[in-house]
Length: 240
Ligand SMILES: [Zn+2]
Image 1 (cartoon, rainbow, N blue to C red):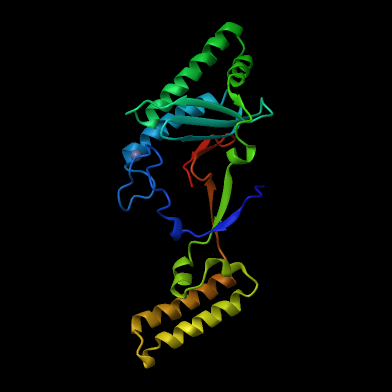
Image 2: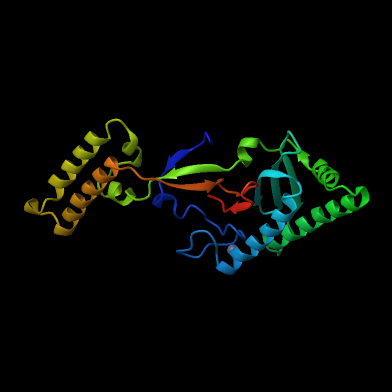
């Protein structure tokens, strides 16, 4: 089990990606991760190639990310006790997805040459892994994390102006009740408050209390700022 589970807010970090997670370009308004679906597909296509390389390397976890000048693949392999890192320089004017394909092609070529030379898949893999930089990243930074999310009640908590952390505190009941009372007094239609706002305050309180009685969470996997790969499932996750 992952020890790094944490509760996070959801709506708040909706636009946390300032740039497209596929190309690094500007993110149009209302887009949350990718500048376009076409752009997303280009990187997903390259990552499928990468999966084909990561399999013979017996990869348990991997991450991929790019900066303005470099592409970086980190991995944890059953063949190695240390983390392994491959770097490649980016080509100006070329999408990271295209550069990634070239990087994978070069590593795959090495693997095939070694496999041909030694006629052994495992030795070919070990030879390619030996060319990686060792120990540059911590295991913890490459391993996938799972975050628990309370998305359902965020807007209700915001309506009553209560921080999300209160939900799991021991005094949740009391804090929410007093926040509710305060808002009700302030916005009661008898004291000149708006009907609509008053109704949402009452509804928010009921929804939050309902959630406390029966808490539900959604989970999301990934690593902040990096694409991450689970070798057991052979699946890539976009940056969180
Ligand atoms: Zn893009």
